[in-house]
Each structure stands twice: as structure tokens, then as C-alpha cells.
Length: 222
Image 1 (cartoon, rainbow, N blue to C red):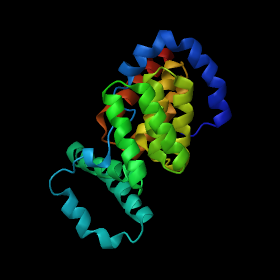
Image 2: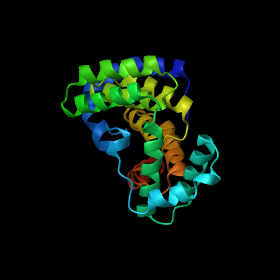
Image 3: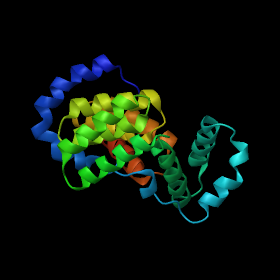
């Protein structure tokens, strides 16, 4: 789902007013849909997947072609385990900035998040998006830190920036669904959830979230 940046900014005031009431609900409603902290080396590949990718490397002549192939396999994966393996490969691609400086800043930011030093993490991620504004995962991870600081307007704006660069990032779409649902924007939350599920059909948390939203709509229609 792609909402305009002006719309996001308008919603920011409502988010600030609503923050005390729904901060805990956001974390419980769609757990794990916002990106986790980490660096490419922190996401291990399941056994056998790396060899398979290497064997098919000549099929994907460009990074874009490789990502298209991976997303196609993610949509068609026959089992949750296989889908999770492909998803981790995609996440490694998301995290790979191609810059040692950015990689170091991202790793330091992840360590700061783990130590609950959120202002430090935010400073580091501010540097990431300044140095490499076309790096979607920088915006995505900064959205997570804003979310953890209960700055939901900025979190939503950063998710929009991440999705403008990589519209298939199911974590960023899930983050928008979380916030929209808490704002009682149910139709928009359902749309976002369905888009995330179309990208990653066997993601159990996304499926559960979509089912919950659909059940709420069915209850409203009775």
C-alpha cells in the first residue's frame, strides 16, 4: 500500500494524541511485522539454500533480476519452512547496502537497540539515511526506532520512504498496517495486510493479522 506523504503528515497529529492509548496494542496486534534489528551477517541462511542460490546465480544477471526471482519463489513456496528460508535470503539482500561505512553504522545501530539506547540508535540511523538516502533498509530500521520511541508519525513517514524505494518490503507494509489499525483506519489496514500477504503468502504472522482484521469486518457487518 502506498499512501501519500502529505496524508502521513496529517495523520501524525492524530498519532501523537493517540499514542498513550494504543502504544501497547501496536506491539501486540501485529507482533514482529516491523523489522528486527540486525546486520546481514546476523541472518543465517538455512542449510542448502545458499548452494541453490549459487547454482542459479547465472540466471540472474542483475541484482534486480535476482530479487525478482527470489520474490517469485517466495510467492510460490510450497511450505512455511521453505518460504522462511527464501525470505531470509531476501532480507539479507535488503540489508546489503554495498557500503562498509553503512554496514558498520547499521551494526552499531542494532547493538544500540539491543542495549535499549534508542537515542544513540536514532543518531546512527539518521547518519545512514543522510549518507545513503536510496537505501530502503535505513529508512525501515529508523522507522522501527521511531516506533519503539512511540513517535508513530515519524515511523509511518519512514515506512513510506522505505516503500517508495522497495515496494515489496512486507515488513514495512506490515508496519503501516499495524499503525493504521491502531488509528482505526480499518479498511486501509486490511488493504496493507492483503498486500503484504500477496508478497509473502505463507508468513504466519501476516496471515493471522489479515484473518483478525477480516473477522473484525465480518463482526461489523452482522
